[in-house]
Image 1 (spheres, helix red, strand yellow):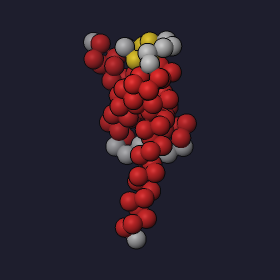
Image 2 (cartoon, one colour; image 1 turned 45 degrees about the vertical axis):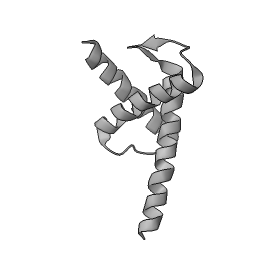
Image 3 (spheres, rainbow, N blue to C red; image 1 turned 90 degrees about the horizontal axis):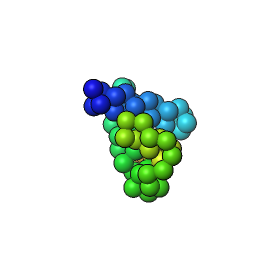
Image 4 (cartoon, rainbow, N blue to C red; image 1 turned 180 degrees about the vertical axis):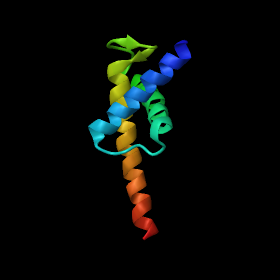
Length: 85
């Protein structure tokens, strides 16, 4: 059950990051989950494990890490779209 809870929380973190940045995450729900997991790892790596924890995610660093990830991903996707033209 904890794995399912982690998937849900990871998806919500990825979705919130997409809303904050204002960009859609490619892959829909699966993209949100992946962005949430990678963003949580990145945020915890950069900022540590502080703030409230839900499903073993430190929420504040996870959201910040996911925002950074989505922002960087949107820059890369934009660069690839410009070179295709």
